[in-house]
Image 1: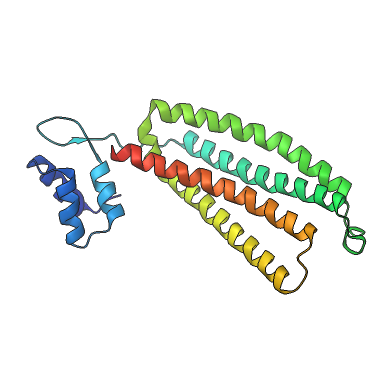
Image 2: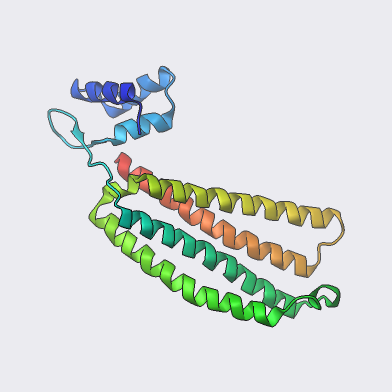
Length: 212
């Protein structure tokens, strides 16, 4: 939520006829952060009227919060088990007798397959419901629950990608970078990178839409 003083200034500036560009330029010069300015300006619609027209504020119900929590939970379960499934197939394709003799690859494949077959359809179903709800009520894009869970997902994905790169680099410097290691590292990196890229694009698209 924008600072009350900033919101009041933006409202008065727009009321007096100042353009959004001039208002932003003055605020940047005064030391305000661009994300704060964008948030304050986004609170008012870009319509031709004598006074600033406020945008509707998001009112997220307990039901919507439940749907977001379940959707992101199913995303985490699906991503983890999909990656684990691919890793087990890598273990089968590039066996290491010293390591694999202590692992139950078959049971892990069955477990991860079951988890993906259950969790991913639930994720898709709830994601489609949320998408339709956002189309009917675009103000929900600014909901705190949605933003917090999305940025949490971005943070987790970024940490996983960074950790994956550290793992690969350490294996390379230790002389242990085999085909098996590379394939596993690429699997983890690609899945986490895909999740990170999609939700980063989603948040930027939502912010651009609200700024219009």
